[in-house]
Length: 68
Image (cartoon, rainbow, N blue to C red; front, side):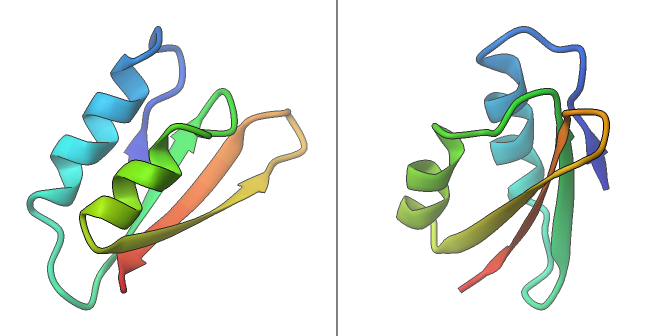
């Protein structure tokens, strides 16, 4: 679980990508951000991951990231 809310761009993207370096093969990272992480999806694809974001009631997003 990673809370990247309150960080200025591009810090949420950088923080999430750094956390993926230690993600075990069958684990999932849940990243909580203030905005939909549009620039993250292509970066995930390049690194062999897939991510799905869900908007929360407060307008933030939780993105579930896992290995493809």
